[in-house]
Length: 172
Image (cartoon, rainbow, N blue to C red; front, side):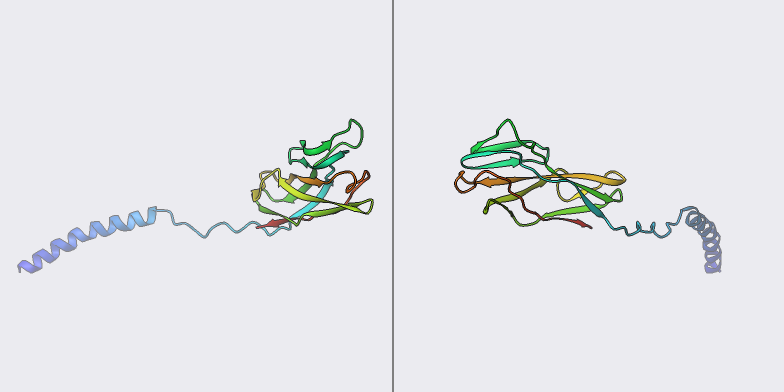
């Protein structure tokens, strides 16, 4: 008989406990599935401005650099004349959704040709860094400079030198 009394006491104390636990379970919000991913969009890049080192006069071997901020500097036997085209950094306009992760990969050094001669150009860093996350809706401007390696005037005579360089924007 003692067992029967103890069994009833346990059942009576178990019922309020079960009601309490069930109430807590019903009150706690249940998380549904996560938000659907952003729609897949194609990131496009357009060239707005070309890279231009401006006018230079080589008096010996040297380098000319235009950084992503647009500042031009020289090292070695280079003179900047007061006349001639103004130096410009390259400008790429990236169209992507806000929050898109983009990595920039520079291609190999470019070979610029002119007057049957060549000059080597190394692609510089991007103004945004790499990788970067787009912080505005739709448009992000990316500036890229470079470094031109120039030899003396006999090897690199006066004139215009031109060529192409490769920069790849990878949407991740």
